[in-house]
Length: 94
Image 1 (tube, rainbow, N blue to C red):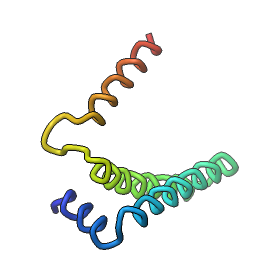
Image 2: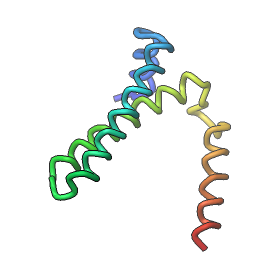
Image 3: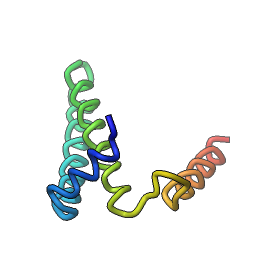
């Protein structure tokens, strides 16, 4: 399965504005699932909901990378920024 093709097709079919709105919606649903888990820590179905929403957010984030010109073939500003933030996290953990 060519994920990049699927993501580009979704952006083409529904448009940047709609996919951007979908990112916002999926993030909100993940937040809601996390809040439910806090209220019901012993309910195993809340973990399933969190995982499902995490997948939805990840799929939408991949589309955002394309929308904002993330280069899948080489290192992009996104990857450089991510490495910088990970190094900073490592520093804070030490």
